[in-house]
Image 1 (cartoon, rainbow, N blue to C red):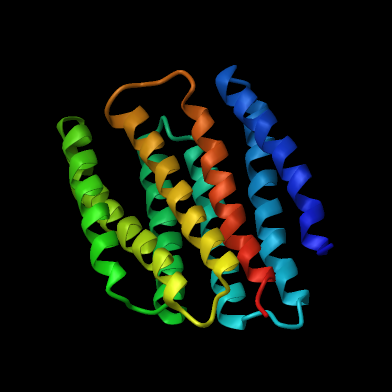
Image 2 (cartoon, rainbow, N blue to C red):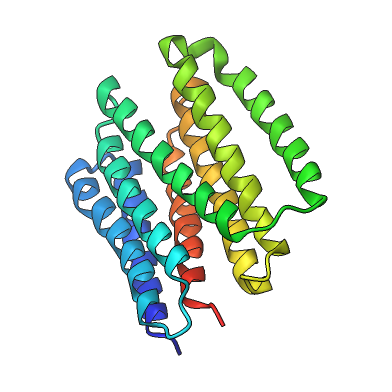
Length: 221
């Protein structure tokens, strides 16, 4: 068994307690559990360097994206403040750009990209129209964010066509990116559309998504 798998049960526990803390508004617990959870995912990416067949570009890129994600997670703990929310948005934007660059560099373009692009475009336009009335001055940043994360997901799916990745890795990367995308939609919908008491459940999608992308780094052959 790979050493990195030992971290998964620990992450599951911290995320479950984090979701509980969010639902019951235990802010001090959130301040502790959120950084710890993200640091565990960073550890998953870091341990990939111990694998003799690791890909330096992928492992380094994922590790860098996760560091920016950690900054975004910390900023979003104070998301009630507009500046903190904007900072979190910016840090996650950089993380998505890094992921997109990795997937573009190591992925391959194929005819299936046309279908995935159309699907993502329809979802992006539909979701934007849903939240657009309440965006105010955030319209520009949100449009950019939706564009970048859509590109990231599209290129994640392209890893299925790349000889660099196994089918198992491509599945982890594609599913991880989609879950990350879905978690961001929950966050945006809660802030700009309809507030939802249990929006913290989106953290399960977020951490599962980040974990899968990081875990793929340990399975190069």
